[in-house]
Length: 314
Image 1: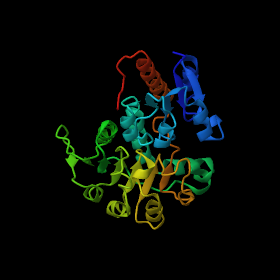
Image 2: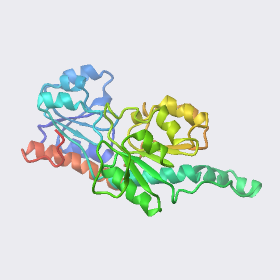
Image 3: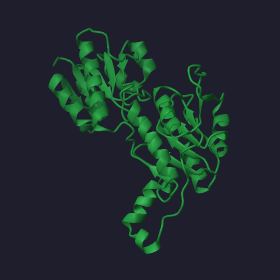
Image 4: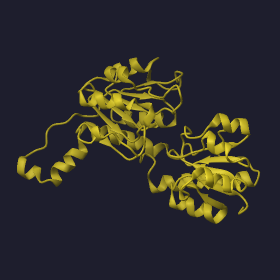
C-alpha cells in the first residue's frame, strides 16, 4: 500500500503519523512554508487526505489535488471538509463516529461540575495556601438536580443526557426533530430551551444553520444563574457576545472546550472565576485517540483494497 500518497494536514497524533508513514507514502503539509507550492509539487502523488477538526480538506485543497480519492477525517465533525466539493468530485469521505462519544460526554459533565462547584478555583485556593491562611473556601452551587438542556440529541448528546440523569437532573433538549424514543422534554426552539434550563450544553454538529446558534438572545434566556457548556464546535457560540454576557453578569458561567479561532481564546475570559477553559481535549484520552487512529487507517486500507469503507459519510 506504499503507492497510496497520503497528505497529513496537521500534526494530530504520533501513533497515527507513525502508522501512516509505515503503510503509505506520507506527505506532511505543515512542514512546507508554502502550502500552495507544496500541493502543486506533490499533486500527482497525493490520492488521500487525512485531516482533523483543525485542518481538513477545504475547496482550495481539493481543487489542488486532481488525483484525490478519499478524505479520512481524524474527528467526528466534518465542518473542515467541503462535503459539497467532495460529492461533486466523487471523493469519498470518512470520519470517526461513536468511538469518542463517551469521552466527550464525560468532559461535558466535568465542565458543568467544574464551573458550578468552582473546582479549578478551589484547587488554586489550596495551592496558594489560602485554606490555612484565610479559612474555608466560599460556598458554591450544586449540579445535582439542576435542569440540563441539550442542543442536539445525537450520540454525544444522548450520552450527556444519560450521565446528567444519573445526577438526578431533569433533561430537556432541542434538535431539528423530536426524538420519540426518549422521555426527555422536547423544546421546539433553542430560546425556549434556554429559558427552561439551568445548564445548557451544546452538542450538535456545526453547519451553517447552527453557526452562532447560541447568540445574545439565547444567553439572555439562560440568564445570570445559567451555565453554558460547549463541547461542540467554537462557532456554535457567538464568542464576542459570550464575553460580554459573562463580563456584564448576564450569564452565570461557562465551561468551554472549543473556541471560534482555536487555539486563540479571548483574553477577557482569563480573569473570570465563573469560566473554565479547556484546550479542546474532549476526545483527548490515550484510549480514544488510538481507536480513532485505527479507524482512519482502516478506512484508508479498505479504500485501497476496494472493500466497503468502515465509516463512510460520502
